[in-house]
Amino acid sequence: MEVSSQTQTLPAIPITMTVNGRSISLDVEPHQTLLDLLRDRLTLKGAKRSCDLQVCGACTVLLNGRAVSSCTMLAYEARDAEVLTIEGLAEGDRLHPLQQAFIDHAAFQCGFCTPGMIMTAKSLLDENSRPTEDQVKKYMNGNICRCTGYKKIVEAILAASGQG
Ligand code: FES
Ligand code: FES
Image 1 (tube, protein in one colour):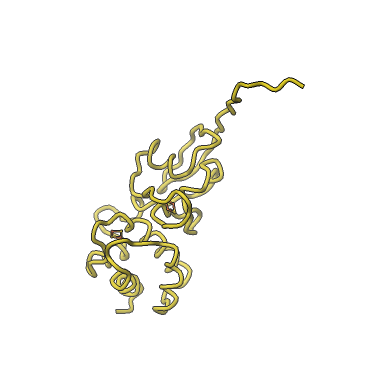
Image 2: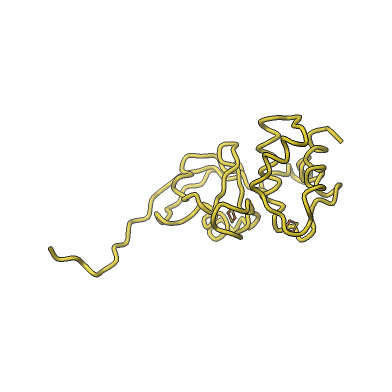
């Protein structure tokens, strides 16, 4: 049997999704990740690329309300879903309570991990509005911060839940 040496290009896939409340329709490459779609095509740069291996949490966004690593999710897998990124969290000039709590508690230094931290924390508080400190630590253990340390981050999340 003759094997073609040419690489086959798979056709782009038409998808529809809602991103930060806005419905969009576009064609995506089969291999395109959700993170690439958000950052490179929709210019939503809040979700960060770091490990690209679902280890650090920097790329976290919400998909139908649940935190996901957008670096390892294909864009077409998010078809028909509601995607929320850090850019969609504030209401006009009013920051989300988690955003405000991170500022109030100085829960970031370089800020690289912060969008992912806040999106994961939102997923937590949507599931459990008054988590214990241990529950916060457990839920957030997939989000890595290299410079702030975790104490202030945990304090900020507890404060945003009305505790502290
Ligand atoms: S960049 Fe996605 S988990 Fe690290
Ligand atoms: S604030 Fe710098 S990595 Fe977390």
